[in-house]
Length: 292
Image 1 (cartoon, rainbow, N blue to C red):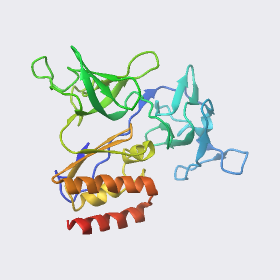
Image 2: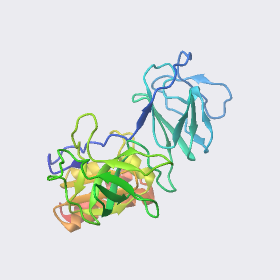
Image 3: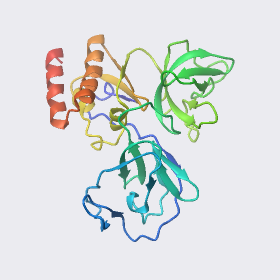
């Protein structure tokens, strides 16, 4: 979550991409190999070359040629849509475009439609449905089982100081555990540092529905997602934003009008698939209409 009101006129920082880590056995391939479109022979890819977009279906095996850096000894980070089958077989679980980040040694599937499937490490916006003795039962996607959020899973929380969340409250959380055999578990604190790191209850504001694709693009490092609408609006307006991988965007500013303007701008970018130049034109129009 970032706050444009903290430093007016500054660029909005990006949220870290959610991910979970698996260590892949080292390959003997000397360099990263990729299969270019229209060619059956793998060609050596230079570090500055643009990777070829490849479409995978559920069950397809990701070869070593498709890894972000086949010669690296760093642990490979597997994102949504990718599964590791021991000892070293990587398969796709969702249909979509395969994306790789060589700098972060990350691999994921960009799925533009369908239902959100929780993955450990994902940052999501959850809605509290009800509470029990020690848990909050939260909804992260419609028509699915509730996820559990321990009432002590907050920074510095004790039985006396834990937050009192009522039904309908919004919480920015991280997926701590997700598998098909048990309930999804959430947390609002880092297990390593004990800090909230921007997670916790979201007070005020409005929630807007966006696609899973635009949600992930918003959470990418600066420039990689090709979404500049928040940075452009943040130059002239002050607001807070939290992006959930479950297709939720929370916006809070000083006025209802500005909050709606920011949320609708992101939705228009999503619906019309605007490029960077078109996004800048949209932002100039929104700022002019608001008189900011």
